[in-house]
Amino acid sequence: MSKKAKKKIDKANIWTLKRIKQLKRDDGLKMKSVTGYTMESVVESTASRNASRIALRVYGEEDSEITYGQLKAMKDAIGVFLLEHGFVRGDRIAVMGESCPTWLIAYFGITSVGCVAVPILPDFSTKEACQILEHSKAKGVVVNTKHFEKVLPFVQQHPSFLVRLEDLFHIPEPICKELTDKTQFSSAPGRDLTRRKLDKKAQQLRASSLANEDDLASLIYTSGTTGNSKGVMLTHKNLVWNADISTDVYVHLKPGDRVLSILPISHVYEFTTGQILELLCGCEIVYLGKAPAPSVLLPALKEVRPRIVMTVPLLIEKVYRASVLPVLRDNEHLKRWLKFPLTRRFIYRTIGRKLKVTFGGKLKFFGIGGAPLDREVEQFLATANFPYSIGYGLTETSPLIAGGLPNRHVVGTIGKIVEHVQVRLEDQDPTTGVGEILVKGPNVMLGYYDNPDLNAAAFTEDGFFRTGDLGHLDKQGRLSIKGRTKTMILGSGGENIYPELIEAVINNQSFVTESLVVPESGGLIALIKIDLDSFAQKMALNVNDAKIEATKYIAKIREDVNKELSAFSRLSSVELQEEPFQRTPTQKIKRFLYSRLKDDHSKEQHKP
Image (cartoon, rainbow, N blue to C red):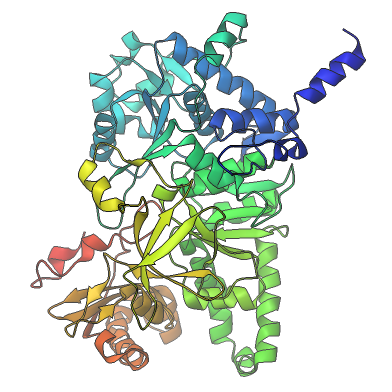
């Protein structure tokens, strides 16, 4: 074959964005960067355009780079191995471990041939992990050494398919049966699933079992604020469409742009908006590889210089309270100039520019989702011209329902509804317009696995999913979130009280790091956590004396906060919360652990 003919064939195999946008569909959806809404198409489409580019690597680890071409080859090899070992469409394989290249490679290998991935959050306990494995009817487990002992009870009963996540080695059943701890697991011999060249027979086998758009891709067990873990069934189309529709709406990414991944990939927020979306754009995803402590995160930001970072509010709120607020609060010279709008804006923008440098200097999109952002922090980010954006969604909606463009949305709102997604508000308050957010669209899950009662309650008769969130739509179609139906408190006079709104007022008080408002004895109590180190330093006290003074200080906070609240929303009491609140993997406080409704006698009984 001549070079000219070979070049012509190569060009025909490249799925350019222009070529993809010319594809027609029967359902009215328009593809932007992928040839079909499947995980197979994600890798195939982007690899055809970016084969030699780096797709995945780990910060600080040499030789961890995986190119798009390698990603495709490894995905294919894993898929064939599964098929040759008896796995069929619909079989479930769990993946448990921290975010890393091999996690995503395993996921693509599993789902490309019609099997279902069951991502298990690393924070889950042994009991929770094994319950998920049993309930999902998992036929295999891909797990890293750190968490192996969490799945060991299940593996000992079902030793047929075990893969070590670090190197994607399959541990044979005879060896698997003998494993008793993670040390043995880490050194167990096995077979590399990814190193195989596919002959014609293997290629035909794989081609005969490729997943369809409406096939189940992920079965994700959530760990919610109410304490009930549910298996959310998400299709290939749910996830890939949600990523594809967002590729040119909120940020314009170019092939080679770097992304710093710091959230758990097993959560759909990071998976869809922090992985699939970026892969479709040809980006280089760099995994932090460790918990995002300042000592690790700051050097990584300096080296990676990411164009995009997806995070939860807690991270930027910590940065604001640790680095920004002390400057604004304690600098007497600055405080005088902060009183005037023009000079305040200049000061905020100066700090904002320094903050961008801290994040590497190339940041164009700082995505915030998973929980509400503190209003004071958001107001600062907006005034400082920091390129933040807020997204809203749930695991059940793959996740994105609404989002905003950096620096273009109104503080306190999320932004516009994603195209092709329908949102309506049910049982709207005639005065405020607030109602429960109902959603229908290509992003909405199939339902909760093996839970018909919950599915009946979760969907309306005309197919809208009940989010459980309370929201408001303004005249421009911007969505804002007002709270949760399950956390809403009914006042003694029948008033609707939204604890999240009260907490936002409390959190704006000096030295408050976070708070939680719960009902108690017909009133409202606020559990308030103070930054005791800063408080002690400011008051020139030792830590023990600072706790005593902090108790007096939060009583003053109660007085100040109550002045800003309506009569039925005022706090009847406050308590100092000394221990950090227990959180879900997306950093929401587990409210159910702090409920005072069952027993009002003892504070100690309600400490988790």
